[in-house]
Image (cartoon, rainbow, N blue to C red; front, side, top):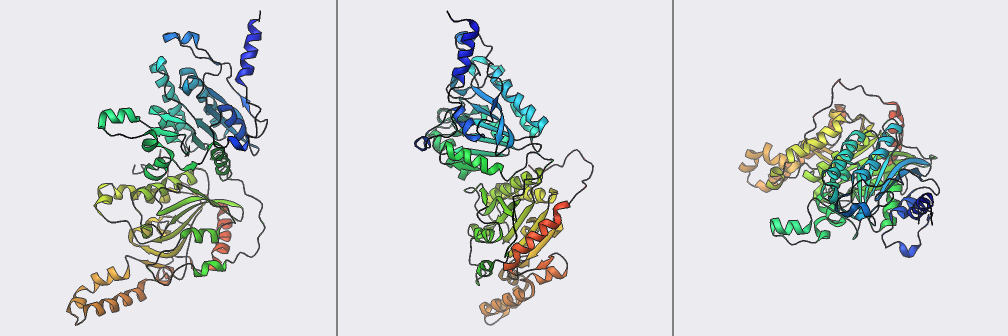
Length: 513
């Protein structure tokens, strides 16, 4: 007969099955991993220390007294990623479908509290069917306890959520309040109400993948920041993302070793087309400025008219916000404003300098934009950049028109250094539109109105469609050749390393949510 202690030891050993797996075979790359496989793949080998493995639920209703598993459906603890301390929880779908109970939530809350005390990132690997219905309000209270801690940790330590299976109902709000959400293609989904409820209430027929899959949330809703092909890639993406950000809000991201060489980039000289209305890919500008292969894009498939992501310049981690002329001519709209604002706020929280690349003809016009709140949503980006105290550098490559010029990190809203290429056009609006307004009567009375419009358009462009007027007023610190951009940025960010800003004494600002 086994003693009680022997049974306990055996149960603990079974709970650790798979715990020693560090390298997952390539043939498993396309399959879902277990909770423990995920934890052990993500963390440095041998670094994981589990907390709460003997925890069990406290429910005796609905036959639950006979269904007891150590750990209660979630693996929690701490370890290191590239020798950096992190706290982690991984929901185990093989135990009650990963459903969250009171004790399940308590385990998660315990490591979240510890992470804030110590000052280390929190990583959640979500794979759960939702609240454990046998526990009623106790499971709902467990979610609320987690939500509260998400808010308390916000801006204190980085919070990353990987959706690696189902995440439905109230469960979705914890990832939504973390800094970055990653999803795995074809095996994960998020929604508040599932397809069956949607069918009943709205009579819409939709699959779980269509309603809340990785593709949906990366392109339509913007809920997810990064999509990964499989579990392995998702875990690798977490590692990459962490490499750009610090442990907490009191530190800066680790600077990688870097030796200066020939920092002049001649490839930048021919990027801007001769035709002012011809698009070009801002990614080419980014690649010409940053350290080789260092750009890690965030929200790649959502609101593609603005680009956000992390990169390195001379080994220093920076955040990039850039208009993309290839999409909607680079206009700001509702979604791109929210996207840029959210990324800006994260960088400011965690002391990551910001580089803003500008080619923006204005805000996207139309009833759709106005009715969906372009005013208040555009103000979010304006507020986020105005409120940011990290080092902020702007490069205007071509168009900077109207209110969008102000919003995109202009000198007037506190940018530290503002550069412009000779091709920059800084004006209230484009030359054609301005000429049609200013010279309306003169054009109307001309024998050849079309010819007169072109003459006046050229006249306006000669006077305003360049960066030198702004430079004369000090709104632009320097007009630089494109090939010199990287060299100028290296020096600017180095000069700004010691920047300090004393904010007004207040509880907090009221961002236009």
